[in-house]
Image (cartoon, rainbow, N blue to C red; front, top):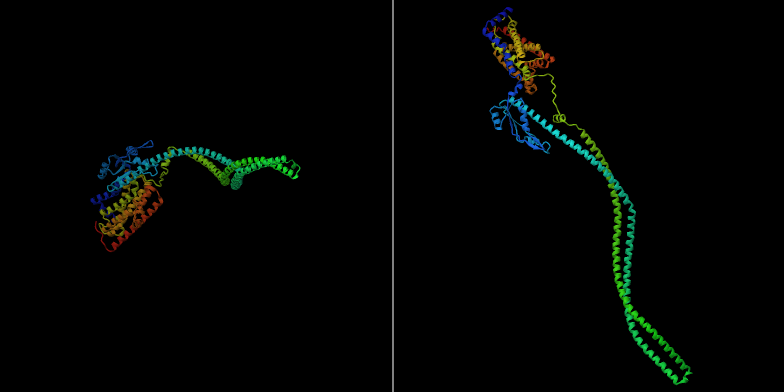
Length: 636
């Protein structure tokens, strides 16, 4: 068996074309993975080569004594920044360059960029718009890089604006604190004033309460005076009525006295006649006595003489008294006119007195009602003043509490620290502290597991196209001889793949695996496992097997989670992920290159050994079936 295997290998090595092709195949993995990883080892380290257009049309603005020119400040900062190859151009040049692939993306700063920054403290602030324009169809990855970079610029501008805004806020807070301190002092004075006002209100209430009894007496006296005024009005009305009667009587008396005076004149004339007649009778009787002396003894005549003397004396007295009576009657008549005039005047005055008494009664009734209202209102005012005093006490208490709160708040505000560290904290309160479980230094290191697996499978697949895996130079003596003649050769190629590829990646590309020894061994195991699977497919199905290997490659490329997480792929590929070997090679290479997770590595090695053993067993069974059927191996 061994001589036959030796003969097979000599037959292969004597073929110059086959040997050249075999040597080339040894470098296929490194040509595939090495060149790709070399080209994309750390693309983000050379972003300064990426041309980017910057258009600044921002106009500076004055606000509260400060000049804002954020656009110019940003351009000034970008000129010192080496993240990209910044090109500061006009808008039309930037748009034209973007369409012509001269620029990968464009940053546009509009005219109102600084003006919008002054609205941060307005009731309706307007955000600053930084425009980002990209030709995604030209280069999708560049658009993603640009979007990330512009977002960083936006975040930095936001942080700076927030810092400025925080500074303004703290300045205003300090002003508020000073204002609150002043307000506290003012509130303290208000409290003192309220306390004095409360005391004054209490004194007013006390003074008014002392006047309650006099006002009650005033109200009571006013009511009594009102009653007396009513009585006075009634009495005056009655006096007026009596005076009217007196006046009427005096008028009648005056008329009677005038008539009596007229009759007295007539009576006086009659008395005068009687007096003259009496004198004449006396004279006659004296003459008769003188002529008749004898009658002196005549008692009757003497009696007549006595009567005549008495009549004459009475007549004289009557005449004398009547003269006085007549004088008195004249005076009475004259006084009666005066009395009548005075009575008329009194009657008129009594009318005025009655009217005045009535007005006095009416006014006094109003005074009495007013005095009662004053008394009731006085008591009501006292009640309201007491309520006012209670309110003043509450207000003074609240004012004192306000004073204390203002003082405490002012102290708290004054204790607030400010400064650049605080402003920076306000502008960027949340810092991202990245804690790497397993560090991956660059893009190429992250993709190395995927491209290593891919290159090893591609190398095995290409080897199947030049190495006669299915053909032999003569009929093999056994299935094992046939298998070993091919599989051992593939194992040597796998060793070379592992050594050449890893030497190139570590020493020339710069790959730094956690464990270099494991990397060589795992690369050999992965390569040998892929070789064994492709050997099985080619021996079993020949060219159809190679086609099936290509299909298997495509399925593994999409389901191995070499680039994006498997959870982001369709359900079918997620199912295929655990069934195909490349998933375990990618995961194993990650454990060796980046994470150093031995447990995962052991699990992946176990899975690859299972695939390898299964492929070996199945290959031996296929070869045995072919030999039993008498199928003659194709000659190489």
